[in-house]
Image (cartoon, rainbow, N blue to C red; front, side):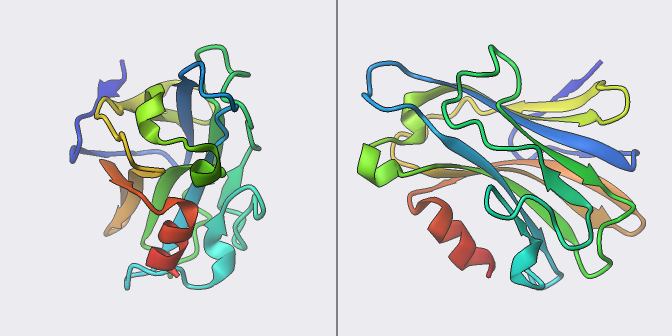
Length: 185
């Protein structure tokens, strides 16, 4: 049975191979498809990327240590039919020792040009599940109204000694992917 997380809640993972699924349903009638993009920022103890290649997104689908890999870009949010729209697979045993946490984000592609924000997205969530068995470990439903935000930090995996834990974050910002890259670079 999966744990339903609340913002700020933390749990232990206890697995070496996990997948992070992000899902959403776009509201109709905005004139454009919603292209939300899942990304992962692999950060060192200083809260920054050790090098640019540790930022996993649609133009860099795999980290240099092969620990984090995106399965691809769903450009409409409509191809999942209620399931995950984008997935990031993580092999925690391969994570470079200089990486202390992995932040999972979703951003809206061309948000300002298309006049889109997370207030126009519904049923958005992040879930962590066992890559091998597909058993869901935890889920965080983003039920807040991010009516002006174009990027959301959904959650993070982080090291505590030899153990990996997950925290539900739910932090929005108005600057899209560029603001997140500037924050973590």
